[in-house]
Amino acid sequence: MHLSPDEIIFWQMGFAKINATMVSTWFLMLLMVASSMLITRRLSKVGARSRLQNLLEVIVTTIEGQLKEVGLDHPRDYIGFLGTLFLFVAVASLSTIIPFYEPPTGSLSTTVALALCVFVAVPLYGVLRQGVGRYLKSYLEPNFIMLPFNIIGEVTRTIALAVRLFGNMMSGTLIMGILLAITPLLFPIVLTLLGLLTGMVQAYIFFTLATVYIAAATDAGRRKKK
Image 1 (cartoon, rainbow, N blue to C red):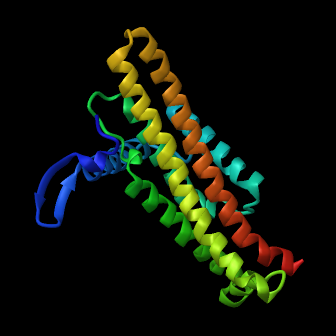
Image 2 (cartoon, rainbow, N blue to C red; image 1 turned 90 degrees about the vertical axis):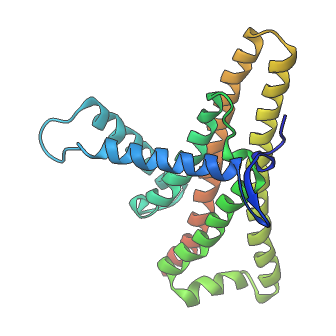
């Protein structure tokens, strides 16, 4: 049993190596890209729409509504990034039902990479919405003494975002592996279904926290304009 897919190495030459995390990540990315191309190839803007398209529109509308509730006035500006984060974590969670497949979110390197994407996106969206001067000035609020604390807060919440997702995903996979080895078949099946539900919840939490961080970065400029 492996604590992390990083421990499963398929090829190595010196410091360069290919492990299960890389393989499973690329598998998920290719699967999502191919699926999106197949699904969107026959979408119709006018006339009759298929049931699949109606379902997709309901999902997109729901995500946009969630973004608006958190505080993002123009959700379509952010849905590409935030929706991709949610789908990646969600699909990674659902992929645990595939035998011998190691989800990439069970690796700290993957969750750190996802958290770093959020870390970069927050100031990027903040600058695009407010401008460089106004965004940087927000680090001095309510006064200049708070500058180091605001910077530390940006870094620590990124670490917390990565560790939270890694801990929940890794522990769930580990517990299921142990139960499959020591208990009858029915009990692990029930726990597997519970693990899938937990994984979807973790995807939603990651998505929501990223949305909250971006909303906070873009909201300061809107408050000042009022």
